[in-house]
Length: 157
Image 1 (cartoon, rainbow, N blue to C red):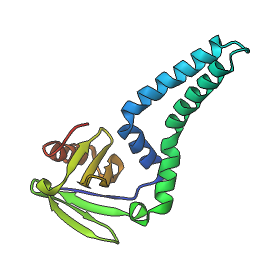
Image 2 (image 1 turned 30 degrees about the horizontal axis):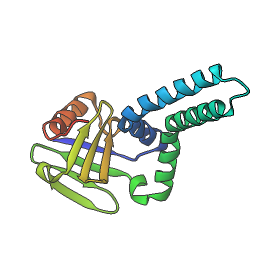
Image 3 (image 1 turned 90 degrees about the vertical axis):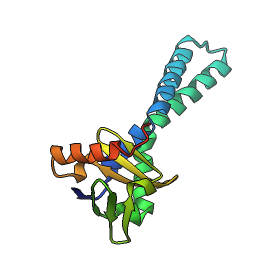
């Protein structure tokens, strides 16, 4: 059995949001490149090229900085997300406890489990998640055990 406990802060949540949005960040990098390329090759008499390049550049930069703003907004507006959580996991089930609820779920009842190097995201429904970052687990051995448990019941993305 592996035990975990902790509370999300803005830095941890922003890191997890960045990890979950990895593919769109590649597109953002392409937009930034295209925007810079367009600005370097635009002429002052071509306002459409300049405007289009600035839009691509702005969208790309926004995607790179938005996880920090998203994390701040989510933590500010959700008491459940801010609340400290503790729990444990074993071969049969995973238990989450906070000041708001205690949930004891068999692995088969979870909608999805995503294992990342620094976090495990438990989807109890399509858009309801419980996030367990690496920082919530006491040791590297316990993290490896929790990751192995979750990997046996996971959908990788």
